[in-house]
Image 1 (tube, one colour):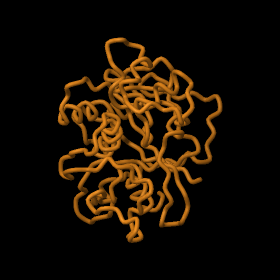
Image 2 (tube, helix red, strand yellow):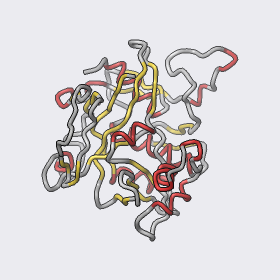
Image 3 (cartoon, one colour):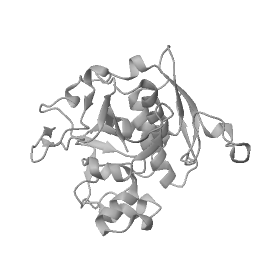
Length: 276
C-alpha cells in the first residue's frame, strides 16, 4: 500500500479539505468523500459559493489548487483559515489494504472484463488503494461483486461536471468549456431530463483528463488522483457519447434530497493514484 500520508494528501486534493490522521473514529466515511467531491462540482456549476455538509458545517467551493494544505503560505498570499476545513481520518477504518491492487504495470490489451453485465475498463497504469466499504450498506455487498446484482464501475475526477458532456458531444476544446450544467441538456439521450446532476465515466482515460493533480510532501513527486466507484444502473442516465454518465438531480431538490440522490447512486471503493 502507498504511504498512508500520501493517501491522505490525495483525499485532501480531491475534497479541498485538509485531511489529517487520527487514532479515533474517522470524521467522514468513503461515501462522504464521494458525496463531497461530487456535490462541490455540482453546486459550483449551480453558481453557489458554499456547501453545507453534516458534521463539517460550511465548506467553501473556492478552488484550492494554489493553496498549500499542510504549511502556512506566505503572508501576502495567505488564505483565510475558514476556506480550508480540517477533517480527521483513521486510516485503519478508512482503508482496506486486503483489496488493494496495483494496476500500474498491467496492460489488458483486448481482454474484456465485466461488472454488472457491463464492460469494466480496468484502471491500467494506476495503483488502487481500497476503501473500507464492505458491510457498510443496507442490502449486503452484492453491488460490489461480479454477479447479477453488481453495479457497473465508474470513475470520478475532480472537474467532471455538465461541461464534460457538452465537450464530448460537440468536440469542443477544453478552453471552450461551458460554465453551467444546464447547457449539457443537449448531450442526454433522454429528453425528460435537463442535464443537471453529477457526472462520471466508465473510462479511466476520460476521467484522467479531468482528474486532480497534487505534489506530495511525502516523496516530492506529483500524482494524479481519481475515485473508482460503482454506479447504480437504475439511477444513471447515459449521454449520447459513450463514456459519459449522469446521475440526474431534478430542479427543486433541497440539499438533503440532493445528497440522498448521490448517496443512493454512487458508491466509492477505490482511491486511484498515478505517479507522473
